[in-house]
Each structure stands twice: as structure tokens, then as C-alpha cells.
Length: 319
Figure (spheres, rainbow, N blue to C red):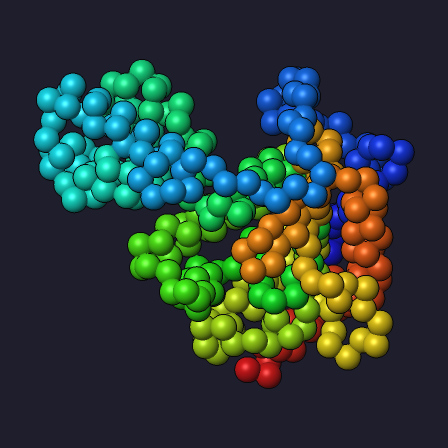
């Protein structure tokens, strides 16, 4: 695997995050900037409801109102404005009424076309957060700027590794059923998260996936085949380690279910757990040490990264 993340990427010593045998010095995306104070996250607090969780309220509605004000100030009808930004008048109406979440590209285009002076762009980050289900928004924010991630997946292929076809199948299976518009919105948001693979400096990414997950034909055999091929491709990246946990292992350190460890840009280590859309961010040191230890044992019990990629190739051959 070459320059893959070592086990130290998922362990902590002496209060500092250690990466490949050295202390990770980068604490902020802005080169040369000092670390900003960490926001208090609490201890094992459930991710709370935000105002925009209610339909027609919150930041998406506020953006829509601002968009309409700037459009009318510019003297443009919805159809005219839509032609300038590549959307139908009906879509523009949906954006203005807070019924559809705009993409970052649309926000940038609208700000420039309407000469909004950065007012619309200023809402871009918060609007982007609204793409995710309420229970995942805080985790998504941390993930986007993480220095390292350790992901244990026991139910489905991790979202960061999912192909478009696999992710769409996952959303279509959710019960109660999601509206088609919601599926497309969440699909776009999930695929946008995968920009983490091209981010620089590159974060260290470790995945442990149960063998049963890789055999589960979500979306059908062809979708699964494409997903396995994608895992092989991503597994070649120098900053990515993918390990398979064989079903026939007699010892298993994580029978309590999936979890993530996140090394935040502030240097803080945070754990994320989720079950039945009930999620929690853990910052308590005792809990973090427990999950760090669990992940380390899992890595020793799973196939090595090289063995794991060979195993995925074998599964492809069986199909």
C-alpha cells in the first residue's frame, strides 16, 4: 500500500494527534493561521434540532427570500434569471420559496449575476449544511475539515466510499419512503462529501468493513459489482486504508455496532455513533479511549489492507 496511514492515525498519545509517527502540525485550513478555539461540543450530547429542520423555515428559507429580493431588484423575471443560471423558472420558484436547497454553484452564479456583493455567498456554508439530515449535520461539518477519519462499517458500505448507484439504492430503501426530490438532494450531498479524497493536505482515512456488507447486493448484482470495483480503486490511494473484517473470525471487538473516530481540524478527537437516525457526538475522554482501543483491536483482527483488496478482487471473480 506504500505510504498508507499507520495505526498511529487512529490512536492518541500525550494529548496530541500523532500521524505517521509525528505530531500533526496543521490545525487550520488557512495556511499560517493559528488554531481557532474549539467550539464546546458537550459530552455525549445528542445532535440537537436546528430551526431549519422544520419545512419552510431556517437558513434555506432565508436564502430564498434574499434571492428573490436581489432578483426583483435586478428587474428579472424568474424565467429570465433561470436562463442566466441554467435553471427553469419552476426551479427558481422552488429555491425562492425554500422548498429546494440550492447547490454551491448556483449560489455563486446567483451572487455574481444579481450583483449581490457576497450576500448570497455568505450563506453558502449554512445552506450546504441543510442538505444533510438533521442528525448528521454536525458530524458532516467535522468530517469536511478532519485531519483523519477512522470508520467502522457493519451495515452498509460507508457513505464516503459509495458509488452514485449504490447510494441511490440505499436512499430508495429507507422506510418511511423518501420523496424523489429528497433522495436526489441527499444523493448530491453524499457525493459532495467525497471531495475529501481530493482535498489537500490529504487527510488520513481508515475504513474497516464487515465481509457481509461486501456480499449484500444492495441495488442488485451490477450495482454491487460497480461498488466493489470502486472500493478497489479508492483503496489504491496512499492516504486510504481499507480493511475487511471476515465473517468467520471467532473474536470481534465491535459487536456493539458501527462508529467513527474523527480527528477535527482543531486537534480534538471526537467519536460519532448512529443508530436508527439517532446520532451522538462523543467528546468524553473515557469514551474516546474506549472506542480508540476498540478500533485498534478491530484493525488487528481484520485482514490487512493488501489482503483486503485481494479479498475484494476475489469477490468480483465470484460474481
